Image (cartoon, rainbow, N blue to C red; front, side, top):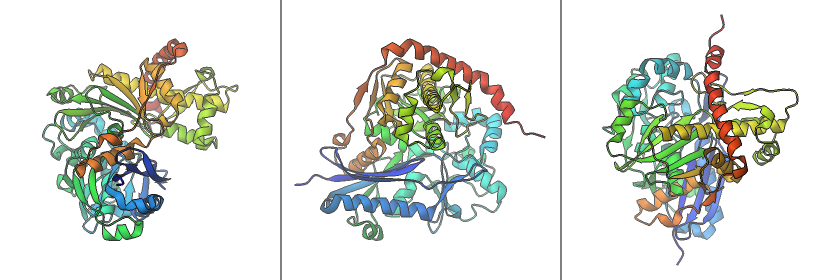
Length: 498
């Protein structure tokens, strides 16, 4: 008898990936993926028409079904994970606001978020576990309403990327605690929608009741709609489960869900997270407002919580530079590692997606520097930012027993080795495995009462490069000092000219 198959969907900040996994062996049976056609504007917008996103979801799911062939009949359940933040607001008919899904990398609301941070950052963090940032739903809504005061008059439901995928599949509107809390919309102690979080947008029609119902990740959500089954070739009525924010989905996919498990996600954002006990310490974190913690993320169980330290850096920097230098991702990394450690003195500040006053740039650039040096500097800058933020988490009192490297960058072991060297720590990585989609499949298995452990990704252990330990220890210290020195420069760059 054939084993059950579970399908996981991962709608990230750059691409949509779908994979089907054998429920007993955990192997990938079929997969498909494509870049999301985000439309970027000079005002900082980053969005895609809902009609295009829907077609992408259906099209890729059809490819997976075709590659499964007769085994498509064995699909037992499906679930989705997705990027946090952004804006997914529906009207009563299920259409997105202005027919656009907005990415978490959208920067249109940067001035609003910066101004609010100066006034209410501490109050917000102590209530919802995060301060204001440009990719939050409330900040984007505030900017939309600034230009169009009548916006959101027809708004009916607010949820997130993975929830939009689920709605396309089964028609249900709901979200989970990890997404809603990462977006700063839940009171971190009551786990209910926060009046403060919605009121700061100063939009009359923006209210807590917009947030759809909350339920646990891995719980039943609905069934595959008949019309979607017909469009994709999958059996009708496949159970659809509630997923989670992509970060927690990826951590679940590798088993990094225990207290002391810490992950660096080498993805679009510089995302770092740690699982800690929710033993009453969360109140202390909220009240202290530690600089090492940018988000308090609520999970299903009240026994644990996820603390994050994020920056607007990440692999978006290397993607941008690879495109600029007209290299593929693989070629770009090969070029980067052909330059010597330290890139002949060239440094790169990795904030290509902004973040407060910060932006990206090369420092120390001279005529003798080559494209390889530029690539190496960008890679080192991205990994140094991860190391810096992981150390900040540790200084906040969050334990670090095991360190995982996840995300697209985990596919190149050289990046894991570089982070391991900067931190002088063993790293565990699933390599190129689609751990986000795998985590979603595990949520799907749990929702139908089946064991999810067989789906967990196999891990590789990566050790620090002993010969470069001293060099990168000094490099990291120099990098942290450089960011501090650049703060007034960034502030000047962001001052309006007369």
